[in-house]
Length: 197
Image (cartoon, rainbow, N blue to C red):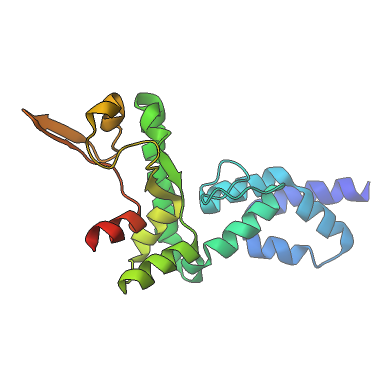
């Protein structure tokens, strides 16, 4: 009965707490810890609201057994954005933008949706910055943290007649004018650095 009562209280209290406050509740008692850690439906909502995650997989492709563990991993991976209100807003806008794009693609161009690559980790982004001694703006970091452009194995970099329809899977659109053909895909920062050399 005690645990059932705590669960009822948790359902009312949890939506009004930050995730950090929820973890503090785990320190109150063993009973609170069991209830707070075990409520997957609430942690699922938190993963979606804070990081735009629809399952227990980070944008980098790493998966976890529970939504609580997924939230913890996402909080560490995207900690750069959560050190200030501006950073939180930037990351939130990025994943909401991606969700809209993917919603349109799922309905009208699922073949393009399938070409999106997993997001870049903090380490990968740092390596790109170090390679060219540049500083990637927070908004761009957020965009590539969720999807690292388009998978090169699924769409050619240049126009290749042998690839036929795959040439037109560029996320950024394309056009043809007589024999001049342009299909713009979303490059990864790594490929962009290579092309800029």
